[in-house]
View (cartoon, rainbow, N blue to C red):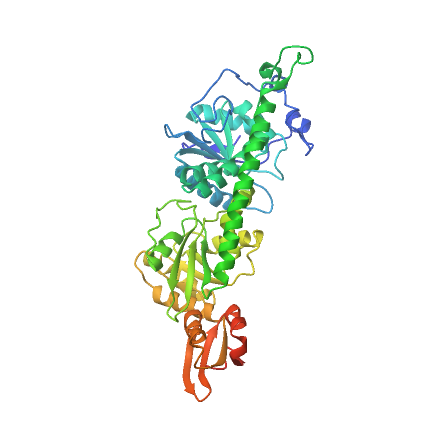
Length: 489
């Protein structure tokens, strides 16, 4: 058994193989092949209950995955598997503890284990599961939260052993998202993710809850309550998918309309709680909610910003990323993440005072690759420079990076100039000769681009300007020469 401290922390190497582990060594384990706890002297009390929102041994999740009528007592469980190290597992559990606190619960203990691979039936093996159960009873915990995603079978088996809820990181993040979603779109996205998570975890009582009819051909076990619930959830998922597809269509129309103008799109991305919303407020006075907690902002907010070079851009705040971001969320939040994919520039905000800023950068870039935004130009911004010199040192290590403080406004001028330079690099400098009687075209150049030189000649007005490709196409008949950006000022 592992050595524990008075906080319930423990660490253990692999437990010896036992009959339970050998029984379910097959990776194709199915939740219908539920183990018999009596066979292995594992006590399961079906009448037991606890205070967690999942009810007896995990019930219906419609009311939330973590109970908020009181502060639940949570035990965290982390498993180190190759090539991860114990230090990485500890850091991940530290973040999970912050997630649990944001969800409204208290961490009262942690258990760590080393394994070559997760156990197909219980993730941690029956011996370790019994140890966690004993610890839960000793410190009166309500729920056990695992740092890795559990299969429905693993969750079901663990709850029978523990006599209390067994959740995973995905469930905690979904719970936080459900608390923070405010717009209709955000609520629909969160509900879709929750239902996709819940569907394979539905639990019924077989024939005890069967729906029986009367008359010839209707007698018998009939349709079970579980089947009815599953079908209802599937219908709701389909409805939400259709609604979000419509929203996506509206966003596509808006994106096309924006691209016909001279305004570029900038998306602020980054790890959760890096200060993205604070930066948007500092740049545009957007008035977005800012709190020192994870996932305080879920709904995308867009504001127009005029850069020092005269360029107009639309700046959008986005949902924060996190390690082990659940696939349910990435899929459900596609409509919001389209803002990132369609952007002309990503302002990647990093907490310069955090414990692992470079690891956070890697996590965000991995998510960007997953959603198809890896090719979008990136400007790295280390925030929270007011909390020490680390942000400045980190900015010096990355070419083009900037250190700022969204709290005090430090570095904002450098940031705006850098954004302006990046946006200008996406435009083309051209010369046009526009007849004097086409004042509408001269006005269009001033409206849609940045005029560098304007001079009256005998045949008309000669204008040198930076313009978008769409504007160049409309002014093609007046173009005298295309000019590389770096050849003329």
